[in-house]
Length: 144
View 1 (tube, rainbow, N blue to C red):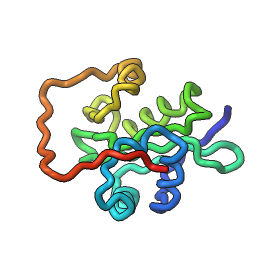
View 2: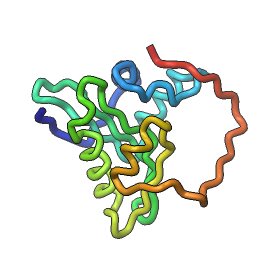
View 3: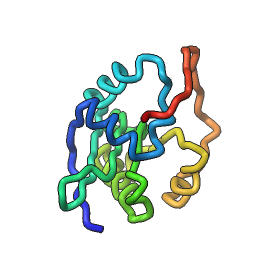
């Protein structure tokens, strides 16, 4: 399948529609979901969208970075019908390059257990130096 990857800002509605076609939607808490998604798509430092030749969204990569040392991939998703075609890998490589390249930038993500083999295939490892402060309400749900 052919696709293009461009820097693009999505609306909250576009991204929520995309989440319904991927397994990414289960990573968000129910609390203030739509409000917080609107902030995410507006403020992510890196916002990449993969589209097929018909202009349909097939993949998204969002990340936060300081463009000097760190890149945290907050979201990486490919629609279910297009997984296994290299789209996720291409999105990750482009995000890493935009942030400053692998010679300068350490890349992190929080991976769903099902996605761990994908990230390991990219050469990522599980760190033991990450701390978390997550004292907020978090009700799991699936975007539908």
